[in-house]
Amino acid sequence: MAAPVLRGCCPGRRWVLACIDHSSRHERRAPTGSRCSGKRGQSSVAPQHLTTAGKPRKGEHKWAAVVGLEIHAQISSNSKLFSGSQVHFVAPPNSLVSFFDASLPGTLPVLNRRCVEAAVMTGLALNCRINKKSLFDRKHYFYADLPAGYQITQQRLPIAVNGSLAYSVCVGTKRSQVINKTVRIKQIQLEQDSGKSLHDDLRSQTLIDLNRAGVGLLEVVLEPDMSCGEEAATAVRELQLILQALGTSQANMAEGQLRVDANISVHRPGEPLGVRTEVKNLNSARFLAKAIDYEIQRQIRELENGGEILNETRSFDYKLGCTVPMRDKEGKQDYRFIPEPNLPPLLLYDLASLPAGADPQQVVNIDQIRERLPELPSVTREKLVQQYGMLPEQSLTLVNEVGLLEFFQNVIKETRAEPKKVTSWVLNTFLGFLKQHNLAVSESPVTPSALAELLDLLDRKAISSAAAKQVFKELWASEGKMPAQIISEKKLELMQDQETLEQLCQATLEEHPQVVMDVKKGNPRAINKLIGLVRKATLSRAEPAVIKEMLEKKLSS
Image: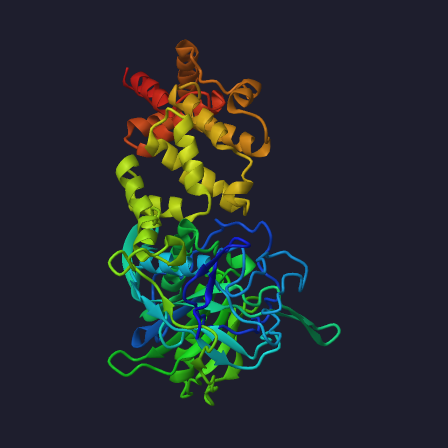
């Protein structure tokens, strides 16, 4: 067979090389209640305490759970895996479909070089062994949005194998303890996506959109090394960050660019693994965690009540918060895998195996891709801890929340305040307001410049810490205003007249003799009450430490 043409992602550019194959295990059917993708503008920093810590549920200590994942990530490429059709999420239905995508007779696959390089880069970042020779197969099954009746995948010999993904889980009552974990990666394979079925319940019909048919996917198969929903969701989030840092996938779960299938079973410690169920098409980390934890408890209840677990496929109903059966897997479907006849083996090279005189544009060089690897999230977290002296759990939050690290770095550039103070304000005050209002960082009315100016005023002792929080509230409610303007309008400047402050302290002592007596009797809370009364009289324009010092002097005199 003649060597195939390896297509670049840019129109008109083609490279002679080997081909790629993609195997898909994901279902075409959407989970119950999830026909639409995530809501637009949904907060990326909404509270996500994915599992509960504390006492195990009844019977839980008698069982061990085993969780494995299959993750499908859409490759960031201008065109599809085997055709020149563009990739666009919001295009009109069936407007981005080539003859090959529609499986018209006589059409042949042309491999996208960008997809190959994305797979190699992802494999390197996940500590995989890159196979210099990988194969493509046809996976046969019938579904309306799969025009060819088969999917091109890498069943026999995928492009990358035997990797690992390190991730960190926060535990403890305040989630202040970080535990590092690792999950093994069985393989990464290239495959083409299917089309999309749009179910019209009103007219009792299903419409087919082939815009997505043939889009390049990376299937990342994680070994069953996890034991709960939080571990799985955290591992997926870490993979999502890595893919985004690499630029190999946008990994936007709301747009279906990252979809997860979870395999779950339970067994008693020391006994063989139990029968597993598969929960398909989970498109958010929160739903993934809930689905896994529910399924673990469902299986435990079933077994303890004398029932048995069926080897079945289930979906997660996010409205009911439970998994529901889709179909059983007892009669295993025969996918009739065969080698893809139109694609020869995909051959990759490194510096040692590169043929003499080879045109760099005609081959994919593993070592060159390795040199282009960017800084990964784990390295970024370590640098934050070393550079700014923050805690590991703080660096974890900064990196994991979309846009928060960039916001933090912009504040650092524009303020003279200590990094620890900036960290505290960003993670506590700023992030707290985002969660309270269910907003993403990009939707915040408070800009990095405004927060930097506020911290500078606080650092110069132009305002008190209490007044600074009041100013932040005003910044949030009055988009466009800057801190200095709000301070001037609200008259929140720090009280500079020490004599007036002393008079207010004296008046407070005279007006509350019982509290003064409690202080002298050794009640530690009484002095705080006096400080609060003086602060109220100053409209929070005096620092608590200064007030306390004045009160203690007067009480001791």
